Image (tube, rainbow, N blue to C red):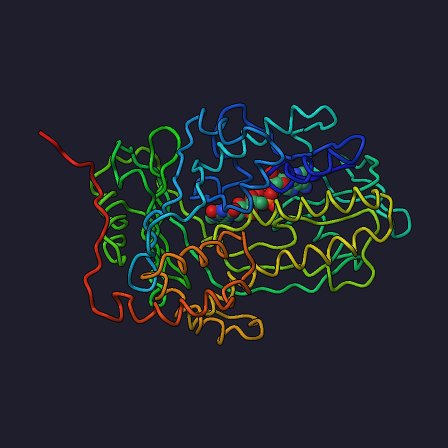
Length: 446
Ligand SMILES: Cc1cc2nc3c(=O)[nH]c(=O)nc-3n(C[C@H](O)[C@H](O)[C@H](O)COP(=O)(O)OP(=O)(O)OC[C@H]3O[C@@H](n4cnc5c(N)ncnc54)[C@H](O)[C@@H]3O)c2cc1C
């Protein structure tokens, strides 16, 4: 079995499959670093990367003790009290959200996961190996092509990311050309790290979004090395400036002062980097009648979401888990495996897709196919956001959906709906009560 790409999706696919197949070879075109650093082919590693509960739960199962390992390497424990999340004009109610998390840079998480996968006895990671395409016998994929030579495989798992060469090659040859759905958002990230002091923001994180409104956002999450990973951004051409003074001015326009205050107060310890992400994109393999036996596609190569919702790694984990379960049942030779997998994967992808593009359609400039019912759902979500300012149970229910831990439909449970209807009118946005912003610096005592 060959997995193409040793980023998060490839590593998790290898882990999930290693329980059910004799051997897995992961081929990665880049030379993988020994140290914890962003790498060239994964430029998003310089930007904020949240691991949602759904992803963390899978990692806990696959790699026992992984949280302690991350914490031992400097990751930060985030208690379950919800941080400071500002949306729709006020902060979400704080209290016991019940989902403690860990926070670290993307390179640290990838390094820990890669280290764990590399120790699996039946998995080999080969770096510096570029896959040029797949080898075919009739319509069956029999392996991958490297330096013009076939490397045989009973199953090829394409985890080579959004611009997958395999996908482009097969589409241009008319062999596998799934319909592609894109929803344009043109989101721009500008990111850097700051020195973090004990007591800053009470050890919490801050995320704020001017949504509804300009859709400008800013976030600061604690990461290893006593640093804040800070990102500010905008959508549809609203690109933050690159100069540090310009960034501070941009941050001052955010609806919470916390991010700007951290920028003013803390020493910057990295370069400023930017990333522009044009559109959420889905290659809809589940709609193709004649998939190629021997090939499945997973992670960003099949679905990549507006990153502000933090879903890519967790969605990859859920897809990898499903692939492992299917292979356990059918084996890798089953010619029907791709169809079964992509049907199930499509159901997994549907929730993060609806959350991401549904949210993005709240901005009038967003373009693309709008899922049925989006406007009605967004109308209800606006009330959920207001109610979440005043009601902890609503904040928890909303967070569970955003963390991909519960389906969006759970927000329509009568328990939640009743509280949404009752609490929305108690939001400070409605009552006019003052919004209390978090204290950015530590308490100074004599
Ligand atoms: C700015 C930004 C912020 C994000 N923030 C978050 C977040 O907060 N939370 C979250 O969960 N997700 C986030 N994501 C998404 C997340 O990074 C991806 O979903 C995740 O990395 C899974 O992607 P992947 O493994 O499928 O592909 P990629 O990460 O793109 O990796 C593809 C891998 O395949 C290798 N490869 C490519 N072609 C070949 C080839 N021909 N041969 C061999 N190897 C090849 C590449 O070198 C690379 O290692 C963010 C994305 C962006 C852009």
